[in-house]
Length: 213
Image (cartoon, rainbow, N blue to C red):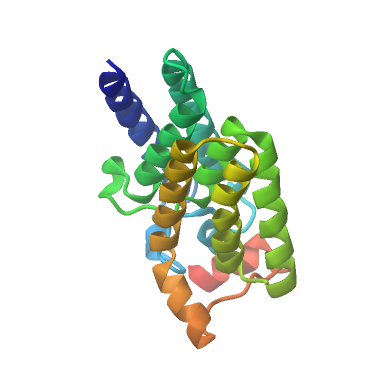
């Protein structure tokens, strides 16, 4: 019975994750495909670099809440068997998988960072806040969003164990981290060579659109 429930959670969460906010908003609002511009990644950072603030909030809400909702569903279903936290984390992993490899968009999506944040807030807000603090601190100091994302993600399993969750919860969280790191493999290469793009603030949406279109 639990296996059947896990399959249901996996399917629902993956399909929710496949609703990629950057692709949907870029197509509907700008009649463009975000994957054709900037880094080619269908994530919030590339969307902001390409289109500015227009549509930014909508992308954030879609990608955050699809994983948040998936995690809540997973927690409710697995909670029947006493594994609510495992259900939330597993659902979040499947939502991140859908975000990165969306069935609706040719399996070319983003890197799952925002989906991961949504999952963590649904699972345990304390863990989410720790990861957010690490992310903000790293980005503020280095201006590398990718580095901040990777280091913040690596803190998640440690926080899970620190808050006395079991090995199963920690293992599922670690799978989420590995998925996120795999998605950032090209960024890691650029960080090593010093060619990774830094976060820039100050350009207007009109300037961004002129640069890309």
